[in-house]
Image (cartoon, rainbow, N blue to C red; front, side, top):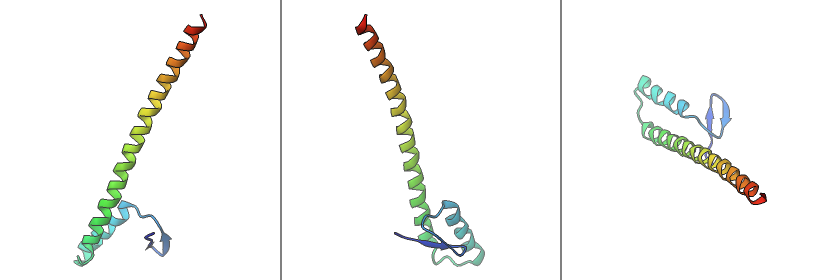
Length: 82
C-alpha cells in the first residue's frame, strides 16, 4: 500500500485537493520534475471518485427496484389470499 506523508502526519489516502495543491506548488517554484506523477495521481483519484459515483447510482437504482418488487409481491400475496 502506498502511503504519503502530508504536513507531518501519516496519510494512507490522499485527497485530490492535496494533489492539486502540490501541482500549484510546482508552478510557484517552477519545478516541474514531479508534475507527471502528480497528473497520474490526480487521474487515479478522479477515476476512483467517478467509479464510486457509478456504484452509488447503481445501488440507488437497485434499492428502488427492490422496493417496487417487494410491493408487487405483497400485492400478489394479498390477491392470492382472496
